[in-house]
Structures are given as C-alpha cells and as structure tokens.
Image (cartoon, rainbow, N blue to C red; front, side, top):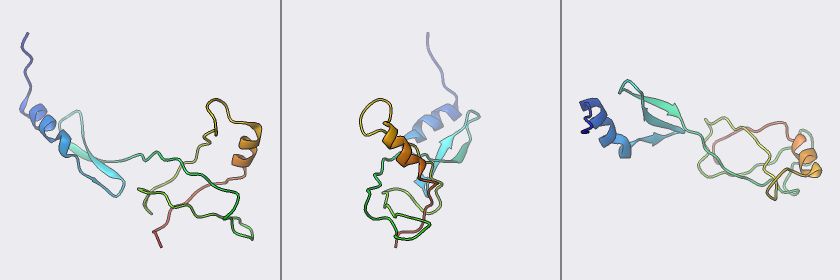
Length: 106
C-alpha cells in the first residue's frame, strides 16, 4: 500500500530539522500544518550547597544554570541524591526552599 503525503505534510517534514529555537521558545508545527511559537521546557539539575547562602533573611542563593534565561519561569522539584525515594532529611531541606526566580546574568 502506497502512502501519500500532502504538500503541507511534505513541507512540515522538510522543515522539522530546521526548527528555530530562541529565548526559551521553539517554532512547532501544529496539526493543521501551521507553525506556532511554543514554550520550551528546560530540564536541569542544580545543587544548592550548604555554603553560599546570604547571611540575613530572606536567605537567598544564586545558582547559574546554563540555558536558563531571565524570561523563564522555574519550577523546582526534589531529586533524591540516590535512586528511589528521597530521605527524610532531603524532604525537610527541600521544604525550606520557597521558590526560585530568574535574572539576567551579571
């Protein structure tokens, strides 16, 4: 059985390898054959060492993450040090983190 493609599908397939990525967004093809800018999700792991925190409240720490830009909205998740469930100590430490923000690289 021969499979045929429409001109829109052919254009989409030809352009797939040329997807543009800029400022946390990528040009993604929609089901109707049009293209639309969509948010790109950046998954990274960052360690927050015990040292490096500010000495007064609110306690803050700056961590540089390659690929993250000032216009991105970080979502924080606990990743256990070893495979499996996090330890009680890891959960307690993570519970002390109230959020994250992004800023331009200084």
